Length: 473
Image 1 (cartoon, rainbow, N blue to C red):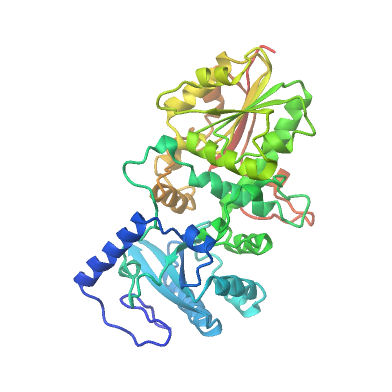
Image 2: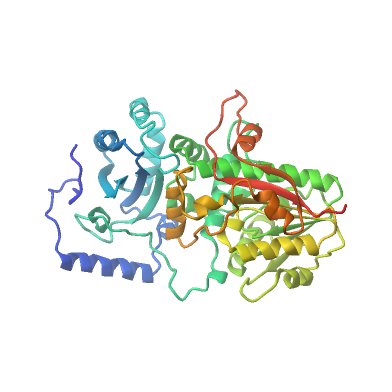
């Protein structure tokens, strides 16, 4: 099948000529109008829309493998376009300098068709045989799916995306949005990863967050190219080797393990910084009924979480103190004190998936607050990235390039990291002492080995999880 770069066919129609710039402007105007009226993919799915859907998959080619990758792309496109008649698949080859990225666009006749075809593919031996040819062709973790939008509104023979331009999913976000009031999309994505991993049939690696699925909005999984069928989504993630999925699973296990240890050793308070949809305050209630939990987060995310908690429990539980914070105008010390935090009680701080989104000054002030405003023996667990990838050096970890680009595009760029091997000095300078500093090898060995001894999947290689204590106990 020839590559379709300048045009694309729709089923039952002839190949059309490249459209004029007037049509391009017209399509862009339509796209802006749709954004303004907030017609998001999630809304379309929640309403059960039966219009066409477009899923975009892209993968970064390993250096020196361009010709092989293009042949593979054309072969798999031809197979899918012939075998599964309820969808049309198009391929676009993007070249930027020496880098090559392959884009696939799959148009589906309906949401039901998406679910049905995803299910059929999992038992398609010929398809999986084709996928074996892709081994070694693409950068680890670069294969990503995105539901772009319902395409029926455009009624076009050629898309802007196929002309090499970028179309982001429709969004209600504008330049005037206060970021401190915006609910974090990344918080919901990592919750989705936990929800999917919580359905793993292997108890040894199954994610302990059984409540995660209750925090996911209806239709959200489909907006990130997955399915509300958790088993199906797990198989898709495994097939695509999404390393962030495995990292989130290991991270949940590791932090839960530390929490249980410190709680059994006399911790009375747990402060969850940037709580997102963290469920530890609710999952550990029966095991540690005397623990007081504090959840600190942006007002929008916390408000959304309270809505979900009301759906789950009838109302937000009274053993949790909710402390909304605007980091631009409020101090952590003041917010926690108002919520009832007692600095004389031994406390465990959970700071999961946050540091790389904030400035070094923000990380510094938070760690100094913990060192200066909690009793000796209190501790904090947080994960961090290597400074090199934050600075844009992907030579050691090429798989990071795609992830960083995606997060920057979504308005949540990674901006903080600690020099590789420098965590101990960084922590000591802020009045704390390192108890453990786990990287990919330790996390994989402890939390990602299945019962049969095989590794569940590749985790993030450029991030680590540190546990540090307030000295003097």
